[in-house]
Image (tube, rainbow over all chains, first blue to last red; front, side, top):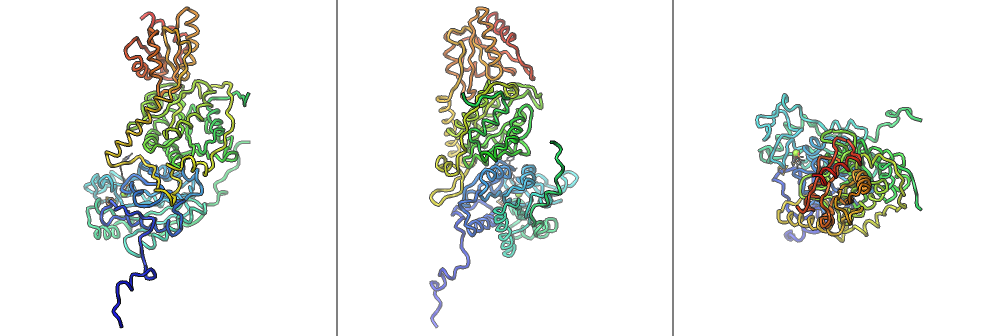
Length: 271
Length: 361
Ligand SMILES: Cc1ncc(C[n+]2csc(CCOP(=O)(O)OP(=O)(O)O)c2C)c(N)n1
Ligand code: SF4
Ligand SMILES: [Mg+2]
């Protein structure tokens, strides 16, 4: 038998994987091992597979992913720190047929933007919210976030987060699930091939939901920030598994349509 | 005659928004302007024109909702009063930086802090010098009647889209709360998405099309030289506004020896003061800036040929007076008269101020 040639292998029918057309060729500014790039890729693939490039608007946050608009070839809005859910609301309400998603870090979504986050979900805005929880402020150089673990050292909690001073890490995703406006709330990660595949499924489902007008779809991705954590990428994955997953368990938290409106309704108080 | 009504200034803002084809209003209640959203909610324009009306969780949210809508080329607006506008300044700065249009209404009340719910004009600096961080300006329109509350909503949208810059209607609790006869505008239909694409397709984020680069509505630019270029472009717009958009009303200024400069409610009071002064044989006039930015600097400077003194009448400790002084440029005397904390001056007080500060002094 003839020896197998490279040209026999590199054929369209043998292709098992390729870069999404939605990803631009711009080199990413993220640190090696950072979760942001992986999640970007998944969103790009979902947009391509659903064929919704012309109908999708991304809302970039303030944080390491502020320049996400360099990497996904769609139209973008770049919101003030924490305000992406309000910006998304304004866009979606005046353009109800568009797919609108926010992409936010823990500082953006769960500290400075807590009010905008809770109220957008509580109104049941038909948007997708993607929440990158890396338990730190990556962009500004590794300061403590609302999601920083007890004992975790950061540049503003150099001796470890202290409950007495800073309170407990905020499980905002569980709070979001309590709100009648949320339709789908899930917690994912992207540190192994299996979790990457799962996370992509969740993102796809969230985007599909937004066309069904059933409320907000919210995906937390428990993520690593090796630069901020001062660990290498492999150590970071291990640290995340051992320290974050017990407190931020992966899996779906809610998957249901709106609660019964009747339950919340009262008799008219005015004629 | 068109549609004549007796209406409150704030109600007219709402009615004018619907009639001029506004796509969305986002707001948060605050006295003395809550009637704007209340009127909209009663009117249900979403059934009539498709206009969106949404009560936000805060002014921070309302201005950012505007950012969202404006990015798609929609005509969006908000209204508030002084403390709420302070909360919006971050978003307003981002809108100016991302070159987004939209109309913001400030029905001023007294400050600082929670201040008072009574009328005031103490937000002049905030309105005309940018307000938030960075080098930017807003187009600032100052109505002094319920009729102008109607007219300036449409004008505000026109100018803000022309320059792709937010426009601010700077009014006060008196103009917002008082009832006057008003001729409402004709109904203009909202633009369809197709029309918006035709008009503003060059810059709006309406979804990436195969035949164009992606559109990014951002105020961020990390390369200093590029960010400087952006700033130069903004400044060029402000200079163009100064050249083409100055609006004012000059009442008996031609032979005036004493010129009162006043906007909004103060101009109404001062107009009466001019009548009283003329009755006493004093050649007084009123120069009313209609645009506070751009400011009628040239016009005021021209008046220095005849005028022996200028009195800036404002319900503040004296903010606009700084622009009047820059316009007068040292040629003659410039004084200020104003009441603060929600106290409304009387025409008699203005007459006395002209006599004491300009003639007697
Ligand atoms: C109003 C305002 N306050 C503070 C900052 C500074 N800042 C920029 S990014 C950031 C934190 C971002 O952290 P996170 O949202 O967790 O994103 P990450 O970088 O970790 O992905 C802060 C505080 C800002 N840009 N604007
Ligand atoms: S600082 Fe952290 S979040 Fe930012 S790019 Fe580096 S690893 Fe990623
Ligand atoms: Mg973070």
